[in-house]
Image (spheres, helix red, strand yellow):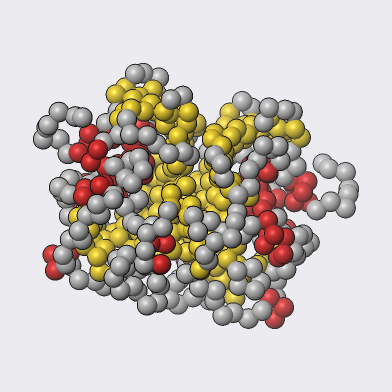
Length: 271
Length: 271
């Protein structure tokens, strides 16, 4: 519905119009459509964007939890954002996404002032072939949003060979397509771009829906900007599947092996 | 302050007095004191308890995210709980904990009706000695709440030998002390009973504070009840430390190797 422009579809998809007092309006974007409603990652990004554009925001995103409370319809939505608590160096946020006077998604977030401290990474950056040696996966016709990402799998495709030790694991290089310089909003969306682990584990599509998603950001503004448009390495795996829900965890690494985000989600499945 | 009773201190600590319309009052408990204010796990449990006692609650806890927004003072607090959205088989919740008219903690939760489905666990239940062959760790005098848990470390104590492959990992059997039959509230608290990974990683105590905690519950009511008062196996590890924050993930297993919960948190640290 947007007029043709040189803007990246992602920027159009997360754009919010400010109405004052933490009230915004936005609109779902055809490019990021999913099987039903929009891709959850772009909704997460829009909710984080509401925090990012707030004038009193303190620091960079540290944590984001998004609840997908109900199906989101294609079309307009309202967002309200509220600083629940502002401390000296951290801030806690609550964001609601409303359609037809009903809350369909909501999020909590933490932003914080980043400063140099002791550093260590205990997650392991795997040894994998570079993105340039791999072919992009074909987009999934039933999930149009997959056309917005260039995904290059090392292992753990839905139909393909799985990792023997961790049968629900996927390792892939990924970035926006067309390439777009990384920012916190696109990083938040990328954290939801891993296919539901049940598809990989069972080698087939089954009815699912993400219920809640939590992302911890490890990069500050400079480190995010330094990534530019290069490929990120994602490593995702399932934890437990049963009684109608499963959870999965993933790490998102910079091209040169710096952990930018770790992310977790719980997903409803039907059978 | 509570009169002597046969009730478990945990039940006293999470007790809420109902005032109607989702409004409750509670009180911190000396037994669960931490270095500053109460142990976060018992606050998480009190916030979950507000959901559990709501008459319109649908199903068992599936996810709980708690934001520790500000220091919590020892003493009275108010809790308000609100169903953000009620679906056919899932419900999304928002809970606020207030002291002196300021939000000091808040939580989001998902409850859902559990039903038998396909099951698989991709996290690995480690081969470890049984709890009866191990000695309980001495409580930490600066953290009185540690007296409320019987913790028996296999590895990853603060001062002791660390796991060579994952230097921030701890594996321990743990349960309430005195023993108390497991329920969702105590499971939520146990998920925050793992020492901050930076203590294990660096072999020393440093100033820290949990900022936000997310737990995914994998057990239904029956499976939680089946655990009774037996030891749970906890496996916790750090993911990334840097720029003033770190995150850690853990699994909590039943005695016989069933994954009851997976849990993640992001923690502020000073230097």
